[in-house]
Length: 434
Image 1 (spheres, rainbow, N blue to C red):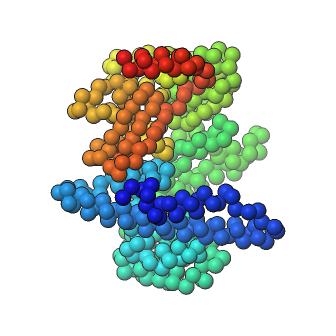
Image 2 (cartoon, helix red, strand yellow; image 1 turned 135 degrees about the vertical axis):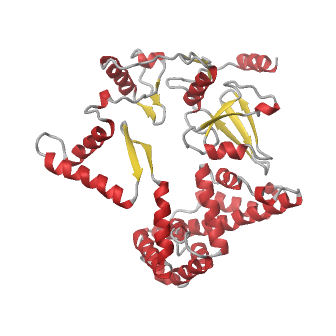
Image 3 (cartoon, helix red, strand yellow; image 1 turned 120 degrees about the vertical axis):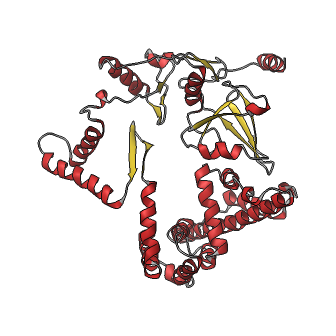
């Protein structure tokens, strides 16, 4: 059935359309009541999404089984489709699918509490996450103890709920908890996230002892150092972390490549438009110029690459590269153009480079047919029913259900769209068709 004619879709669209036109409340108490009810509705929607997610999985498995798809390949990359439907990253799609499976198969009380609004989606996620390592029987027991009586959830905060789930889990199966902690050590990693005002958040997920030891060492150093200069305790800890990891006492001496993308107008000081740092995001023009000046003053190894953009659209069309092999230069180009995974809603760093039109089907290895992608979405794209069509900076992804999602690579720093006359648009259309 066409989704646009499905009775459920029509009803949901009608409900969504009614929210912005609700009549204004007359007093503060009514406003608080509405806020509370809307929060419950959000939770109910999360429960309904879990139900629809499982229904999608059942329908997909049935259709692929009927089509003769081997069992081991059925349902592959379904999480990526769920992520697109929920406007989320590929990794989040996997969590949403696992969340739905747990609620629908093993945690009926949690699902009911979520559907009634007694439990928020995040707190339901805590329950699912902290019971994932248990047997189905023990998971169901925790589900019953915590959510069977929804009145017990009143006033319970995130940390309290998390601690209670862990306590009961250890009571039911202490060995499973120990095993989980042992396996979790393989998940250790370091990551970065942009922060406001030219800062970045450096995060490390470490085993318990290692993490406490690192923090304790930095704190002891700060305790002994603070007061010798005008730095705060927190600043001393941050500086010590940089020095101990890199061996450099100043950020200007760090032996790490930083790719700064800016227009010639920004570089020469005539523009205040934002520049872009690969792996971070936009930075102020003055900050970008200061980074370039610092690199030159420090006599570091600096490389200038020219990137060519179409004047009217800003679409990146070519780049000079100092690399000897073309594939390496092309990867640099895709890094600069795409900045992150080209699948809609996915901000994951680029990990792989692939053809929109598969190479086996005649797709060329070029900027126009190239995509920077994360590992999960590059794997999903290889499955039957997935298609990608590119047009300069635009990529249109079609999933096995026939839904299309459009991704547009960001315009280069400093670009401003120029007005285009109707005659110019007609000429461009003729040239594109030629």
